[in-house]
Length: 107
Length: 114
Image 1: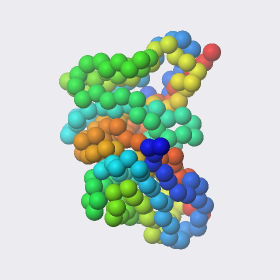
Image 2: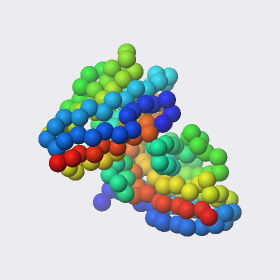
Image 3: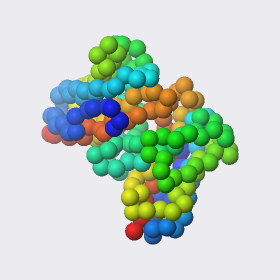
């Protein structure tokens, strides 16, 4: 993705917690979105942070630090169905996606 | 049901044969966009439209055209497809240009150009 960095792959165990980090370049930055995409499916919106801090949505939380140009997606109580690719996307005039993190949840 | 639809879902074509991929949304969204997805490159924006008759280039517009004559439709046109346009294409929409952080994606169109 354009000036957006996130890990390529991560593996975690069912029931555990995983944190997917994302760094971005700040020019024209408004906020950070997160999307989930299962194999063969379309991306679906998970969360958005416009301000610093933590946004909690059930098992998923997202965090933003504008001063550090950094955010993360936190997935708790991992389930097998959470195996998917996760994209952070920087909202500027348009939405610029990172290359995605492929998360594999193992039993 | 609120949705974004794309047609066709799969297409195999030959170099140079003009094609159009249609996109339609029934949510009265102002903003629509086209992306291509290639392994290891994530989603890259091709074109977007803030409203009817308003379109703008994204990051990878070369070889593509779009039009936005009606609010609900945003077709992607490949005038002379080439093999490097083989990809998975997604159309997306959001309520407004202020709400682009939350986009609704169509099911995707897998295009192969031989």
